[in-house]
Amino acid sequence: MRVLAISGSLRAASTNSALLRTAAAAAPDGVTVTVFAGLDGRGVGSLPLFNPDEDGDTPLPAVKDFRDSLVAADAVVIACPEYAHGVPGALKNALDWVVASGEMVDKPVALLHASPRSVYAREALTEILTVISARLIDEASVTIPLMGKTPEETAVILARTESVAALRSALAAIEVAVAASAPR
Image 1 (cartoon, rainbow, N blue to C red):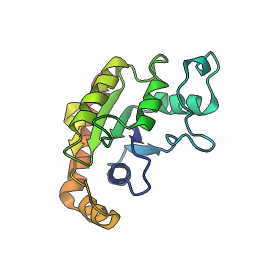
Image 2: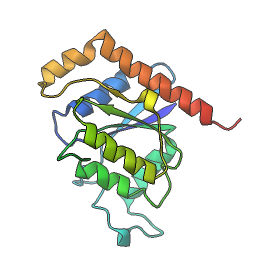
Image 3: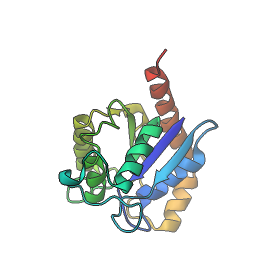
């Protein structure tokens, strides 16, 4: 199973990005987790700001790459911080690029959070995912409290058996969801 992991945070020391890297390292045999790195809008391969005028028959190269990554993935995992009671702009921008193109339609999605206080972001992200017809897998959506931790503290917490088990359990729930939606 192929999972595309997207961090809504651009911070170098992001706990949400650390959560995704740990999920990738903890993935069971047969599961590949690839972390998408093109949200920052800077440099080659990064998504530009969404503009419907730029979303014609021939998408921009970075947009095409993002969409192709979504199509190739069996599922998506999003780790999202909360900013001003909402979804960070870079993540919202990425999702805006797939509203009309359909790559997320019925795609199993799990939400990971590094803060139990990211309630508004989860609600907003759930609404966005509903609009783009993604399939949110609640059993695969987990919170591992890392808020306010240094990178060293984050590494210690994510190395704990219970953290790794929670991430493996989330990936297993995604596998079940993917298998259930596979054509028979």
